Amino acid sequence: MKTSHLASLLCSTILCFSFPTFADETSITIYSKASAGAIDPNLYRPIAGQAAYNGMNVPGYGVVRQIREVELPSKNSVVKFSDVAAYIDPTTVQFKSLTDPKGTKVGEQNYQFDLVSQQKLLEKYIDKKITVEKLAGDKPESVEGTLLSTQGGLTIKSNDGSIKTVNNYSSLSFPDLPNGLITKPTLVWSIFTGQTGKHKSEVSYQTQGITWWADYNLTYSDGKDANSGMIDFNSWVSIINQTGATFNDAKLKLMAGDVQRAEPNLYAGRATAMKANMAMEIAAPKAPSFAEKEFFEYHLYTLDSPVTLPDNSTKQLELIPAANNVPAEKIMVYNGTQSQYWDYSGVYIDRGYGIDNSNKKVEVFLKILNKKENGLGVPLPAGRIRVNQRDAADGSLEFIGESVIDHTARNEELLIKLGNAFDIVGERKQVTYTLDTTNKFADEEIEIKIRNQKKQAVKVKVVENLYRATGWKITNSSDEYTKENAHQINFMVDVAPEKEKIIKYKVHYTW
Image (cartoon, rainbow, N blue to C red; front, side, top):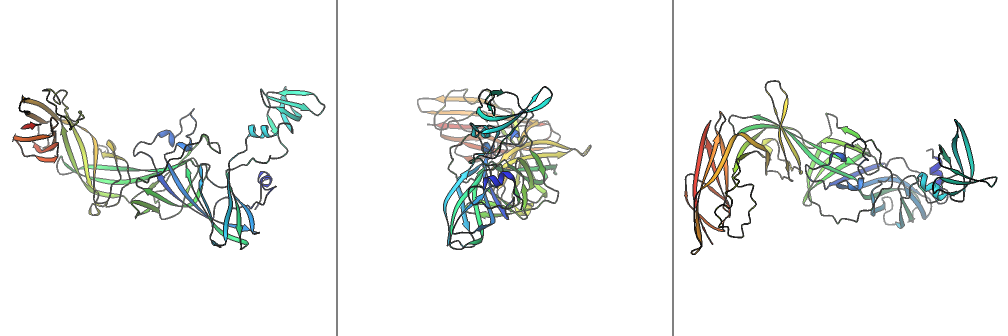
């Protein structure tokens, strides 16, 4: 294996072993802290004129495990690993000999990240010889001498004793790389072993600068009535790698769940400069598939074939197999007081409380059961869920809404808010109100109107919040209702095409 001049300089003072550019075997488990559906586009798509995203701010982390063969020629050898992530957490690093785990120990561990740069080279070469190339008119000219200062340009003492200042130069030449500067972040171990020779070793560590999140793309088609339909369900996982390292042919795992982690104090800067351009990679149509399993109190998704995660890249892979013709229920919900934020602990006897500024919007939801018989039945990580519908006139897909789902276990329901109905309108008003502060009660009559301007009948769920006092009783109602909780009742009503449905009820509050 050929060694570069800089690498040979790094190995000039202590025993140093060269390794393949990439590990013999790499695996990485990625933990996401990204808020579902709230990924900053700048994270994976740099904007012209803006610096690339700082990997320390990427909302996630990874656990990297690498298997490499190392040579331990003596009972006390120094081993260097330079192909590690720039955002490594040095406190999490572990080295283990798989060949002789009992007889091989780490005596000392160091993480070196003083990376070479022009400014650092100049600082190291104060009072030492350098060569500066500059232009004299249109011809190059060399200035050789001792570097005295780097403030306000370069101050150089020439070989003849004269002092020169150089402000504009085209290149600098240094005779060698000073001790202490390296070209890559490097892990250094002092290894003690009773078995010299080749060892199969395992190195693991945590790194910032990597995350993943789920995106779900649904295509909706109308069903037999206004409250039913079918969906085609597709899901993708997006992975951002800004760790400063490329993971080639790595075994990939994704951990889904709320894993507790003590947050370290973030340090400024990073060991290597970010590249300005980031590659956007899309998985091939026949992408490898993830196998899901329970792991502790979380869920682990393991890709069934190796994948390469280049530094400064976004990769997308299919998360779960596509499911077609999944039954979906379209739910219309009217909550005339939803704009209010109630404090149910008190008593609110003002006549207009909760009546003013009544909401008129009827919300539209899709409800999907995450069951095997529907083609799903897989634990779904939190993520953004987008819904489209095909226009029969030209076959194009049109966006009809999106929402964010939390981690959803199998056999649970997905409730996706798409927006507000255009042709269904609600109205809520107070008909009567009687207050008796002496005997501490109030009687209130509420009227709700649902107008359906569609040419189809619709079913609407009407939500009523009983917010005036913790003690209440419905004394009269035009329609059947169900008690949702201690402060809410629901009406399920059918509204005929181009008709209006009126609900009236009376409630008796006590305190």
